[in-house]
Amino acid sequence: MRSFDAGSLERPDSSLLKYYAIISLLTGPGFLIMFWPLLFKYETLKYRFEDEGMSMSWGVLFRHEIHLTYRRIQDIHLSRNLIQRWLGLATVSIQTASGSSGPEMNIEGILRAGELRDYLYAKMRGARGLGSHATAGGGNPHDEALSLLREIRDLLRQKAPPSRQS
Amino acid sequence: MSRRVEEATAWVYRGIWGALSKWFRVPTEPPSLPVDGTEQLETFRPAEGFLRYLKFKFWFFLLIADLAILAAWLALLVAFPFAALWLAPLAFAIAVLPDVIAYIAIHLRYDTTWYVFSKQSLRIRRGIWVIHETTITFENIQNVSLNSGPLERFFGIANVVVDTAGGGQPGKDAHGKQQMNYHQGLIEGIDNAGEIRNQILGRVRRSRTAGLGDEDASSSGWSAEHLIALGEIRNTLADLQKS
Image (cartoon, rainbow over all chains, first blue to last red; front, side):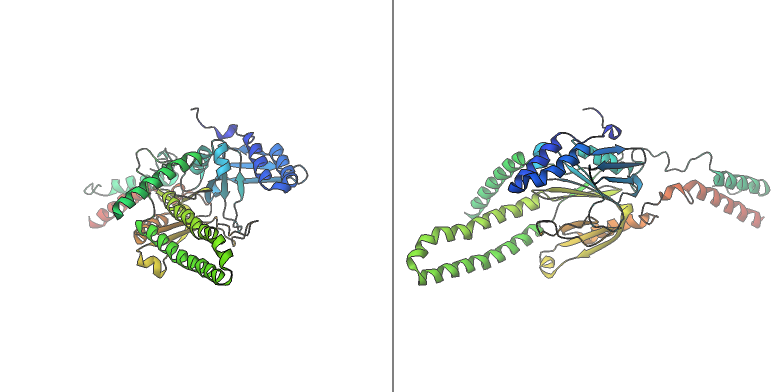
């Protein structure tokens, strides 16, 4: 299994079109009304995953673009209905702290949705820095406040008898 | 006798469940969360009491519905005896079939609900037709509530609800079905709800941010190193004063 690289994800998988066709067929007579917008959406859907944030855009007549930063993600949902499971698809929904009750962004048509979810999870607040504890200790050599404090301590120690040292 | 029946039902159910999980691609293993190194995940599911609670509600409504169907059929029998006898199999099917499906659905619902806790976050999986997984970090939780009705208390269970920032009333979708509130994590039917609430609250309190996308607390303010240096200064000053 090759490693997951979200940056290379730009287009949804072609099975998303199959999924759209199936759910349009399920509406019966409404197939054509239902299918055209979804076909347009599939044809124009684009994703961009960058270091700090992500964006998606779609639409032919009415264009939509959504941008958000990973840090402001509140919660991540992954849902798969029966048809999606058969096709190996999933919807990753992302929520920010805005006032709508529905998700702000629905990422559809990603085959390795679980890995994408965990990628986003590792970038969201509260789970950042998973796997690296370098920042946790505060061992930053360029920390000005810390070096000043140490300077004061050393100056004071020169004045005081070296009796109590922790 | 009843024990053998129980074993047989369990066997049949396992068979149905096995087939369903294969055809319907239901994951049989619990969800996992990315963790640091060797950290242990805490994985659990609703308590046994939750299953009993669901079944109690099921038998209650089954009794009412089947009595209604029986009464309607008896009325028909008095009015048109011939037609009623013809309709008997149909009435029987209407009375029994939904019950069987509902009973299986209860077990499936119980078996597909999972709660996973790591140090940073929690993940909830729920659903049969639509499998829904919610991931919330403790940093982002705004409040925790615990609720239980009298019937739920009788079965020794309670629900813990965690809310994140943002809101809006969840509307009805195209089919008139109540949509779920995406800013909420529902941990339902657990028997150690107080413990779980305290555990979540403890982790939420430890977070020093407002949970609205502000920078991590560790990148600002006093770190452990600062505190050590400050303590040393205090000690040295105390020594100076003594001498």
